[in-house]
Image (tube, rainbow, N blue to C red):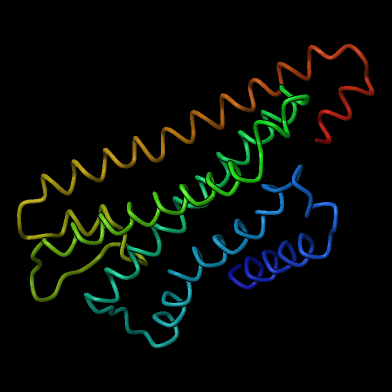
Length: 210
């Protein structure tokens, strides 16, 4: 399954790279499927290779530094993928619901800014969780009931007070998870309702293709 994920995302990267139509401003965020594919590849590579090594060597051990590093990159690529999908949803919303204003609203500067802000927020969020993890104290040896260092499990295993960590974790989950999710639902609901109002079948087909 890991190899399928790797080769599948490599195919996406190659397909987007060689298609000149996706290198135009209209398809800026579809071209960012490369970023999406890279995020998925890195996301799975954060946990799966270590799991496979553990299975092969029959040694289910990870260092504390390795665990914190795994948490950082796992959160980084998971949240960045979600942010990229929400930005792409907004892009398609403008393209279909406001086609005449698309080039004005989604100018190259705004597109680059949205991608940059998304990555900055993801990096800061991952860094915050990692630094919050470093303030916790743990017993010398402890068992993680998971195949990777999952943030919530790590917080539950801490020997020190975890109230602040829990507050930050749930607040970030609602803000950075719920916000983009609501944005995606809103964008695509408006897209579908806008398409359904189109009278001609050819117009609906073109809109769905977009």
